[in-house]
Image 1 (tube, helix red, strand yellow):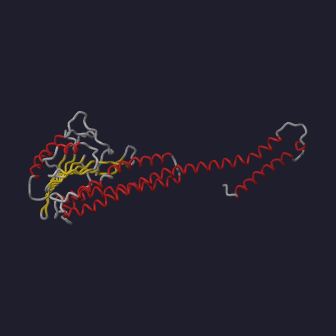
Image 2: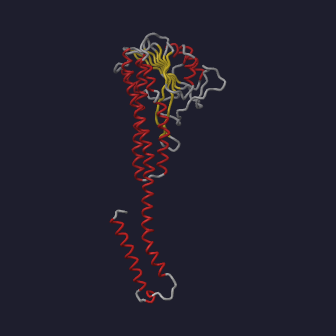
Image 3: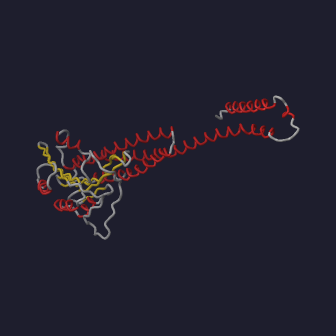
Length: 362
């Protein structure tokens, strides 16, 4: 899976003066083509088409036989999203949210369909070759027998799900479109666990680096991770509300069977949130550990300098006394006075070092 430059989670800025429901793309400039992939399946059938023309995709979605999953990669061409949304009967506000990147995860009930937005988290190569957080918006529309997903660009997390559909393993091809929507959200949550595990490994590495060498480079890395964890928190914190809202949608679009699986996904979302809070606390502790380690090293340096200065206090006194230019100083005329003074100073220095050592001062 190839992902371009990093993009963080930022709230969409509405076009000034535009009316609510205006389908205007708000995101980074892109020139890649919009690609649609269609999968139609059932217990005894499976059909997959890549790069399907819009007209054909719309025609196939009107079929009543089988579950239809249309995945659209690229929302930067708002006219395509608007045309597809109009054909499906989507509300203008839904289409506006699809093309407005940076949406907060949420679920909305429009009676005929459910609209869900999520954040897909992954790592992308940063400016200095260091992995950095990438947050991509996933918009999901669940209709009767139809699931439509909108992604910002080509490449996603759902290849294992497609492989399960191809092989017909498990219950995926036996249940309805609501279970497919659940499976898509479950993969997004599971991938978040992988991202958080990578953060945990990075925090352990930084902890060892702080204990070994608390440099400013390590502190910069800690602060960088703290900023990224804030973005992760914004992306995962609303998941609990989204899944709780879906649990209350039992009816035509969400069956009782899928409600059970949604409860399990809700539990996973709570675990994700707890893990995020734990990692944030660990990063805060790393910052405190850095300051403590830096203070400890500074204390060690000051201890050595204090010991050196203390030893030189009596030596400086002796040198100062015998450096005075008085005429009558008996030791000045003594033959062994110079060597005696050196011996006395060395004995004082060694004696003080021994005394400091016995007290455990160094």
